[in-house]
Image (cartoon, rainbow, N blue to C red; front, side, top):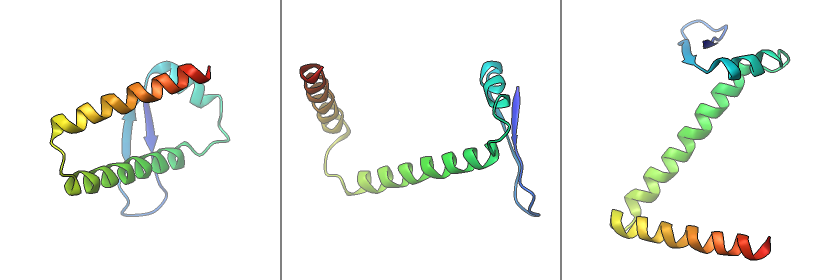
Length: 86
């Protein structure tokens, strides 16, 4: 199944995105939503996140291995905190 991201402006590219049938059915249940705009906003948000991560990475003095280890420690700490509060 395809969802087409189409704009009404000239010289703006069109993009097709494959989505699962069940997602398409749910989207079809909400015709009041401008799904093209939802997709555009999502793409922009993801690109903003990637730009932040690239900038952060370029300034980091950690090796990839050190960053992964730090990430594991943060995740473990958050898991423990979440379990204590539940």
